[in-house]
Length: 523
Image (cartoon, rainbow, N blue to C red; front, side):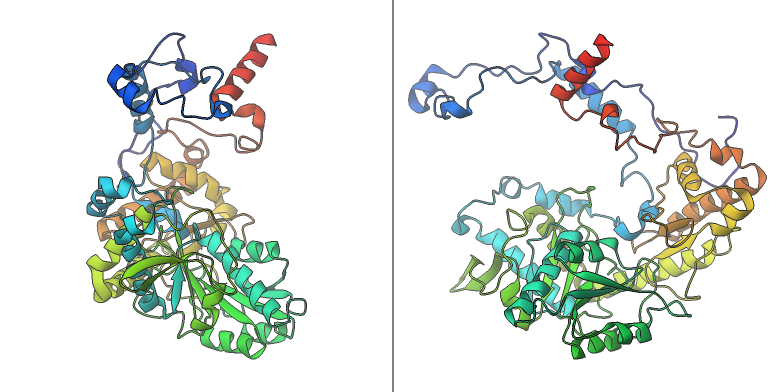
């Protein structure tokens, strides 16, 4: 604790520490939480005992092997854990980078907590969910206006699944035209998201990757050399995670179209584009948005996300099913699309996520969405120019204006002090701030990716920048402070070499815990 500089401008943060055991270790045989009363005799006579109706093959032969814990003990356990958590509402999430942890209006949370929304079931008859289907349909109309596309599906559960769906559409489109075997290449750029190439590979495509030109922009001459009669499609994120927007994107899509390929657009980084540019005018045939990012729904680390996948009229019949249509004064789920790639997951979108995004769009309106983009770009460029003045920090490739985020580099800091971006990441937690590096392998050396969005005030940005300045100063004057970080967190330092890959170090079920505990006792 004596190592902490209390005179810095950064937050004096210390995470709560409870030395809390895991829930399985709280087990006490015979202890109970809530014991429901036996079924009233009159009720049992009227509707049965509630168990006999379950097929015998599905009835348990023994009680479930779960921890036996009293109610108050469970409550205290989870409250203590919650105090040890650095959540999105608790800190400035600028450091989440590419995942755009935007402010989620609390009034929208009240909407989805309406009991009629909470109890919706995806297998309900259409006649009983007309209101929710209307919201799906209206959000489709909003997405059409924002992107210029003609139809949207909310079946994909997020960006990667939407990319997989688009690669599937590309595959089926060329097969329907008798060119499925001939067109076996997908072109992308080095700074596009890794899932763009990965999902195309899953569909059997060879990947051609374009590297930037001498000015840091996607190289149009390399694209001209890459397209051929083998080109099936072109997929790109624009702006990419570097924050660089390709100003020649329309020329790119024309070159690919002239070669017979389909162009599809990863719009995960759309925060700086709302109301400014549209996928259709840039020449794309398909695009997706992440509702859990751009449109103010929770990310939840793989939770109830929804990807909005849009296509032009020519590709409507290839969309994953179902899509929502309005016909004869009612909303219906349409399954009979002629060339549909089928389903990409079991059910149709997440109703609560769709409602949150719809509420956010309607509350802002067209001008509000454009204002979001303008403030996101303003915030990003304010931060960009401040961060470049920090000793040891840089931003490779294009100099000057960036869009809504930047992939920065501590390469100089590492060369001069030995402090890496992972070291900085751990030190940032001492200030209660989240910091995002990048995806391995590091194409930008010692990267850190910041995306301030429209949600943060100048005070928020200044606080975050002050933490980076403080760490840079420490790196040059006393790097051991950083090397030994974090000092203020519940867990000091995690051995990242094999903690997630070694099954001996974790157990995800009560049964596996008992098995490992038994093995441990026998040693």
